[in-house]
Image 1 (cartoon, helix red, strand yellow):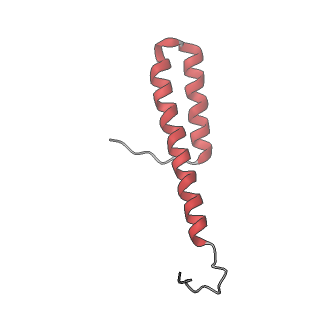
Image 2 (cartoon, rainbow, N blue to C red):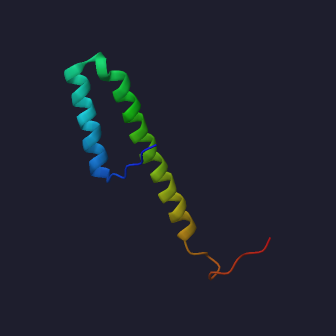
Length: 70
């Protein structure tokens, strides 16, 4: 397995290149292009979910920072 880290801009650029490849080569590359594009979209969604979870955890508590007991 190979892992690649891309910035948001690089991911968008790669998706654009994939789109161009499909437009120029047609159905010959479409299946592979969709697979790679789906990987990029899923990774972006997972990163967004991680960022939202981190932001939620980092929010200050309304009770002066103390844990509330039930």
